[in-house]
Length: 365
Image (cartoon, rainbow, N blue to C red; front, side, top):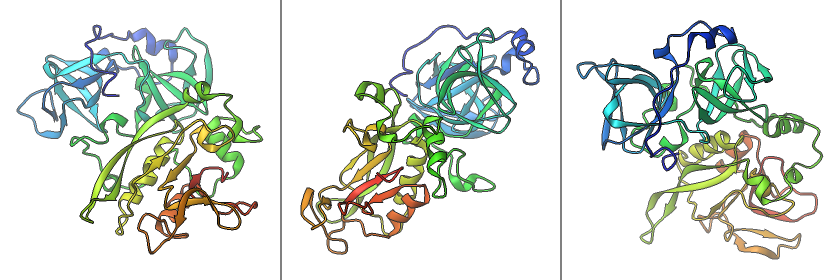
């Protein structure tokens, strides 16, 4: 998102009171409280203040390139949501943009709301979302969120939902002040899959419909598939030439509706006490009939977690030597358990007898 929101954009748009009256979905909000833009921090460091004054306490610190959601203006200050905390940042250090295509993350409907075809009440409703349901924010346009809701695109007025995730572009920043232990109930983000989902539930979760015989064939070609992919950032451990563990950061392309789940998976893997090393990681690629082609599979350390025929002959990669090679992932170990917890299956249980030790997929294919 950082590279998208660099440029200085148009003036703030103020939504009129009639917008509230037309929708009839939420309490009336003053213009100063309406969401208007995404701001990019231009200072080397910028404090999020409790109030619109330097005399108020600091809630968090953002850094150059970080994104904040602007929800109002008071004098020389913007009221913003920065990494799930609401406060104030000075106008001089934020560049604003009405971004039509970004990947922000999940949000919760605070009211029963219409999901519309376009960014305005003049557009027809394509769905009606109940209170506390979730959607995935994929853009921003003139005070409206562009969202994916039950697999369908649409627009929701920004003051009708609450963000549940840090914007993707801020994950690797020192300004990422949110930690899971900060949650009172310490519950996972809504929308994450789990190992108890049926195939029909998984199809609904990813594609918004259940009448799909083979999820690997949903997209006809690479161009069509890429419209549904999003780049996420994940951290893993690796081993340097001196044999010491160090942190690596990867950009991984996956399906937009599995992105938060995949980030949760790798966050848990990174937190494992054994610090499993990963030196090769792949997600989406157009591979024909494959879950990689729909962004629902990842390959980890393929050389040391080979794909072999029923007789153990290598097809891709060289070998599988858990306990001997640290890059070989033990069957049934902590990594397998985390993927299983979120509904993924390792490619070693196929009826054909072929085993793909590197491969984890959402539908087990």
